[in-house]
Length: 108
Image (cartoon, rainbow, N blue to C red; front, side):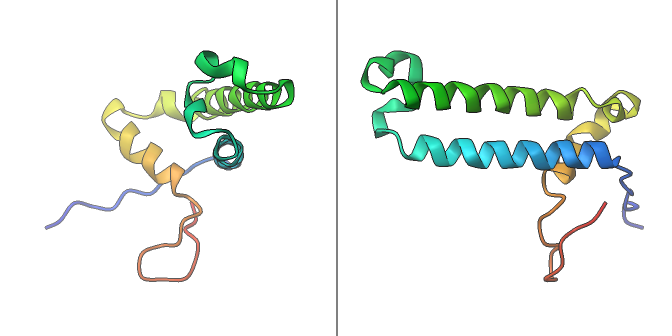
């Protein structure tokens, strides 16, 4: 017999925190794509960016850190066996991805 499929009971708060994290990461990628190709290391090339670019990069970096913390600080992870955390985290990251073989979004 195969491994039983686990069910995942993410709270609405955790799902919303993951969605917020995905949104800020997408916004940050878009912002970084507008910067010169050599600007991946913001501190090393800060002199080549204008104040608005530096401020936006810093804002998005901090928003990314806060959103990441909101996901990881959720009580759900503390009650989960360590060996299940990687799989659960991966499933949460893909909570809105279409399920394999269907056009529907995955649900918790």
